[in-house]
Structure formats: C-alpha cells, structure tokens
Image (cartoon, rainbow, N blue to C red; front, side, top):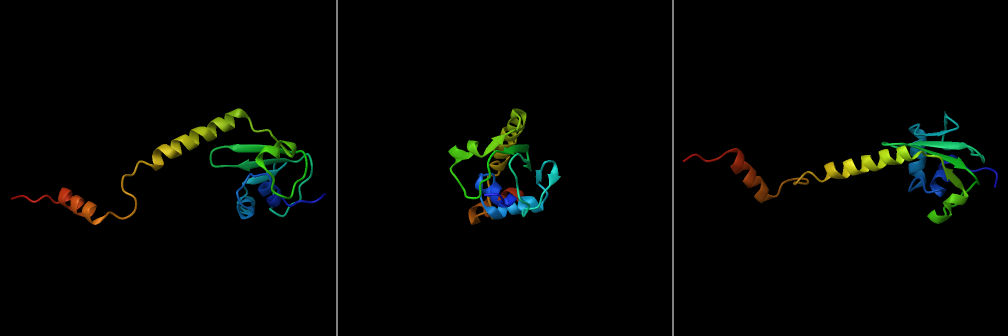
Length: 129
C-alpha cells in the first residue's frame, strides 16, 4: 500500500470519529504535514509528521506505517508515534474540565415551562395590594 489520502489516514488512526470530520479539519487548515497545511486528498508517506490543531492544544503524530482501514485503538502504536508533549495534554485536560464546569451552570434549558413562566412573571412584577 503506497498511497493513502490524508483524511482517510486520520479517520483510520482514530484522530476523528468520521471521515467527513477529518476532511472538514483539512479544509479549515487545522491539519498540516511537515509544517505545510495539507488538503484532504494529499497522499501521505512513512516518516511524515502530522500536526492537528484542536481548540485547546496541538497534537503531533509521526507516521510509522501507512494504514487505510480503521483498526482497534490498541493497535495504533504500530502505525503512529505520538510526539505531542505532555504540556499539550495538560492544556487539553484543563480545557475539558473548565468546559464541563461552565456548561452545566444553567438551571433552565430551552423554553420555560408554564409554572416557571408564572413564577418568573410573579417575581418580576410583584402585586402590591
């Protein structure tokens, strides 16, 4: 196997859940090969270094063997070597922890119920008798 598209390789090595997500990441210039932004259709080679920009960190991978079919997560170490420093993973953990703390802060999701609306109206416009 000599040629594999970048988006297919990223999907096969479980960097993205779907191939369309890996294609979108390439279109948005989140993926680079050897410090050059790469299109999804670019063919990869053994020894290339892929960098993926995530919202919280930058992930670096070195290609050991080429792969075009999705495999189990336990077998990934035979195909890619993770070059990402530990500080980047610490940034990701902090980002995820902060995101989960702030996402559950709202008591009301969506439209208020009839009872919630009445309580809110009563609170905002109290009757003075």
